[in-house]
Amino acid sequence: MSRVTIKDKTFETSITEAEIQERVKCVAERINKDFEGKNPLFLAVLNGSFMYAADLMKNITIPVRFHS
Image (cartoon, rainbow, N blue to C red; front, side, top):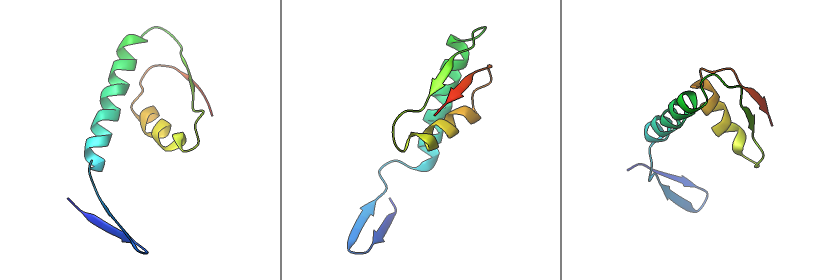
């Protein structure tokens, strides 16, 4: 596992970026399947959710509406 130190705090990576991206892709594939033929509305309502929502939207292939 990799480590990064910021000021006096040291952090270890517990989940790699590749693992996170793979899970986001799995979620998007499930949404694409479950909402095929529909036009869902995505709402990003939590502070910090935009990055996750952006990664998710990169893998969504069905027509959607998005609001943040």
